[in-house]
Each structure stands twice: as C-alpha cells, then as structure tokens.
Length: 356
Ligand SMILES: *Cc1c(COP(=O)(O)O)cnc(C)c1O
Image (cartoon, rainbow, N blue to C red; front, side, top):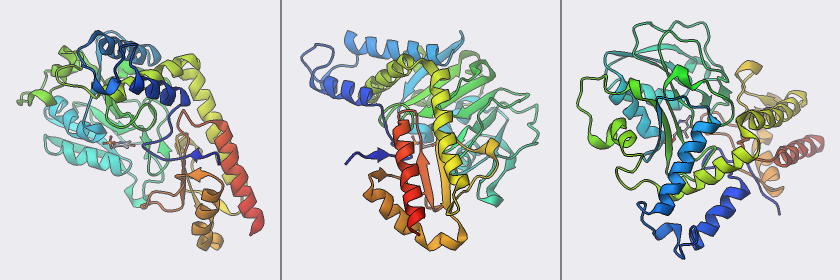
C-alpha cells in the first residue's frame, strides 16, 4: 500500500533526494567508493559542500557579507551557540512554544533575556502580537514555525534590532529577507535532509562583538573561516541536502515551492473547517502554519480520536498523531509531501466522518 508520510520530523524527503543518496551510498561520484567511506577532504566532497553552499545562497537570496555553515548538534545546539556568540548584554525573545522556550532557557545562561510576549496561557495556539522589542537588545529571536502547535509567522517581523530566527521547520517554504537577520538556523530533518546537519546563515559583522571566551567548536567564526570543514562535517546529510536543494531549484525555486505549499495547506484547512467532526486548534488563519496542520475532533466526537488514527493508518497515513502536548492530529505538509497525500488524507477524513 502507498504510504503517505505526515511525520513532523524527521520527515518526508523527495524521492529524488532518496534515490541520489542511495546511489551515492553505492558509488559516490564515480569514485568506486561509498559516500559513507570517503574523506571529507577529497575533491569530490569539496564539490558537494561548495555547491550546497552556493545553492542555499541562491535559493534564499543571501546577500554578500553572510556565511552559510553546515554544522552538527541540531537546532538545539544553536539555542546555546546563538547567545554565546551574539549576546553581550541583553536579548529579546518571543515565547511561542516548546522550542522557543528551550532557546530562552539557554540564552539566560549568557545574559539578560527579555521575553517580549508569550502565548503559553493558551497552549501556544496563537502568535502574540502588538509586543514591543527593546531597542537596546543585541537581537530579537523568534521561531518562525512552531512545529508542535501549527502556528507560523510567515513574514519577517518588524524589529528595531537585528533578527535571529529558528527556521527549523519552515526554511525553504517562503522567501526571506536575509539582510534583516544576524542569524538564521535550521535543523535539516524537517525540510531538507536526514537528521545530522544544521544550516546556519550568519552575518559576518554580527560576530566577534561579545567579550566572553568561546570554545573553538562553538565559535561560528571557526566554521566560517574553515568553510564548515574545521572538523569532519556530517558528510551524508550534507550530500542529501545538496540533492534536495537541486530539486528545489528544479521545481522553480522558493516562490514556486511556496505556492504549492500554500495550496496544500489551504486544501486541508478548508476540509477541516468544512467538517463537523474535525476542528483546527489554531483558529486565526493568519497564524496557521502551512507546514504543520494541527486539528482535533469536535467535543461531541472526542472519543473517536484513537479510532480515527487507526482508520487513517489502515489507509496508509503515517505520522498523523498529534504531539502529546496538543493531542489530536498533526499533518506535516513539508515541501516534499505531494498534493496527492493531502487528497488522500482528506478522503480518509471524509470517509470516516460519513461512517459516524
Ligand atoms: C525540530 C525542531 C527543533 C529541534 O531540532 P533538533 O535538530 O532536534 O535539535 C528546534 N526548533 C524547531 C522549530 C523544531 O521544529
């Protein structure tokens, strides 16, 4: 049976990425060796990382004066590296969920943190608005897409200070005005590659401004100076990331991808809104994520949630159970998920609803 992969992360990758990765595991770039067993210093891998770097810059329109880094440690390590490298006195953060919360916790280890707003009281079902970002902050950190709750800020916020953003779960789903940012980071396993590499886009001028000592491996300058080759980078995830980036370019770039992403999300939200049985957990359309669609059963059907997951699973849907802190269902519609899978899920919801 065809599987429809709605996992939140690690998550669906394009067939192109999987096929090219599988080929390279057998024979990498005609070397007669597997990508799993070659030196990262060889010219073949250097070509991979160079092209990946160039494609990130091209797809996201990264201006001069920024470095693209391919690091280990996941987005979670960036929660600490960001303040370690950029926070001298005070930083501003917005609390839009568990990941934002974790970023705040790490930042507090390095300086003052002003939390400008939080939607915790409503279990993070909306994005706070009308807050003030202090003009004396070193940066303002936000999480563009809140993977667990299905809320998203689909624009670059107005800010009197440079932005820093955790784009782990929506990078490459919309054009970004990179020059407004001192730093953007994203773990790869939501929209790009297998887990193991984190993309960081950092403004050169933002570095070297803090007075603390920074361990070599945690200093962005180390990796910027060495082209992400100070030590052994995550070779295989970077190779896969390159395949996805090529695929994104082939699809027509980020604007084209965004159009499809919006269409996929709209179709599913419309189906949820039209149904009597299902309801979205994020009610303000402006805050609804186009990457992670969270929904539950209306109160009178609540006891059918488990049965629906079983039913959907029997029809080939994978990974639609909601995060434990939200409950219900979550369908992640990352770039690689085809419209066909959205249609299959909607058909499944309709069939279930007509049976009850
Ligand atoms: C998944 C996720 C993370 C955590 O990523 P790791 O690579 O597992 O550390 C952080 N932020 C957001 C928004 C995420 O979706």
